[in-house]
Length: 98
Image (cartoon, rainbow, N blue to C red; front, side):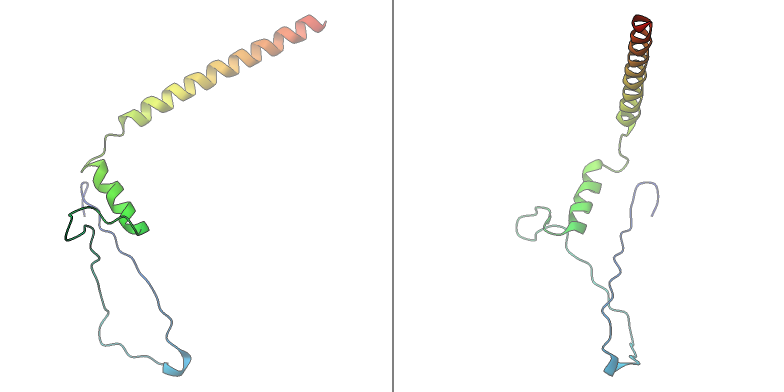
């Protein structure tokens, strides 16, 4: 794991039936799930975890997030302008009522 790679671990638990307690386990089983179909090479997206993997890979090794800042600035500018317009309109309405 580093700035360009992600380690994804899923931990699942299956409760041991009461009649089998205490359960002694010699090893912890592991499994690596396939992310691509062996025959077609296409991504397997039928499981939620695999959908996450496809999204991560699709973003590239280091995702370009510069557009997020640009959108935030644009949205805050629009919000500020809309707030000023509403405030000015409210002031005008108050003046007209007097």
